[in-house]
Image 1 (cartoon, rainbow, N blue to C red):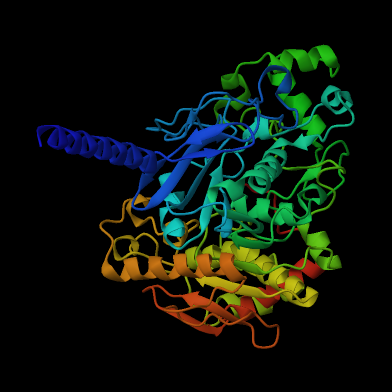
Image 2 (cartoon, rainbow, N blue to C red):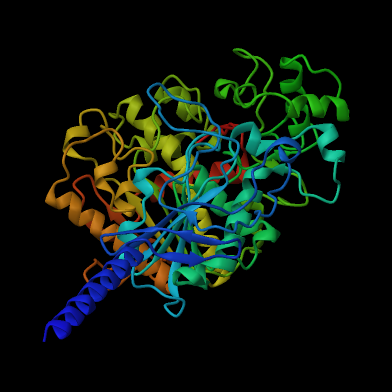
Length: 543
């Protein structure tokens, strides 16, 4: 009996140890990628993997080169922590770690997902005017999406002059390579990583939705029109993304005055930057000196001109003719975009003050509409009693985001693709005194991700109504990723956008979600007329 008892005890201990090992394994799942094994963590039934390299460090000779393949690793790579953000201007109080070695991605997937799951995949492209931001922002964590059986991917891409740069010697170097917008090359490399590896995390490489906000939304338009991105995704969402030329939509790499909105070429801007750092000439030796500059000198405090009113030293996105061959607007006008489902919209009061127009009064602003002055007055100030601040806020919003979104939706409808439009107008009660005219730029992001605890501006503890709005929006986005249609159980009906009815999903000041005809129609119509007749109002601005 004593021997039997000892045997049972040993068996019990063995089972306990085995169970513990299994538990540790479940809490630290390992997945084999094309470059090596990564070990993640499990929390709230969601497995997350952070800091996975999708390209080699773009340093040394690979500064201003297309992303290079990842060097495989032998040991299991810890993927429990975010890695460094890409170099960028550091704001007061920022504690973010940055490094040129920054081409990493992060993903969230249900803890129970397997290679057989074939879950829809969403790839988030962060905003920040192409000069700031990262894929590790807590506001874009993918836990809520994973709980809706969607695999969520975020990633870093090169920013500022490291992401968009041209120089004569650089154009001549490695002539077979793409030049100019290295940020877009990074985005395409991340999407290629998804295509190759996402099945191992339970995702379906044939059901990928790209979505982005602000500069990330501009990137969505660009990826829709860049030939090298074809086939890497199957649905698209643009949040405050524009769609027309003029805001971060690309300048010629080497032609002066090629576009009235971008009169200086990217190569000239690169030479301006070199000159600021006392690097003369435009040959290979000058390029070597540029590559030897420190990261801090390249970032240069985020300066885009050499002193106030000085020559421009940052180009923004570049039309090089090989990678980026056309702007989204020109592609949409010709109907050459892919025929895929689209969701697009913006906030109700994106930017106030002088942004598109430098007008100092309503009269000055309306006069700039030229022959459409009277129509603009009727559309934006029908009773003549609105404050200039409100008028300029609505004008900025409609010009840069509202009308271009409608233009884009119409182009997709004309192509025979389903399109859904929205306007987000909810403002937390604590913000309403300062956000007098509606929701500002980026207000919807934490609701889309259902990350209200990470909201910008600290509006206070989320109310039950705010939590319900976040659940609703996160569900819309997840449904769209699954089927190309945001509708489903427990969310209000969101109608297809049609050019006759022009219904959109409107989220009003109090967070009520209602489908209705677009009440901005008169304002958007007069802006559309200006776009068709003249473009003097618009300026190149960063978002």
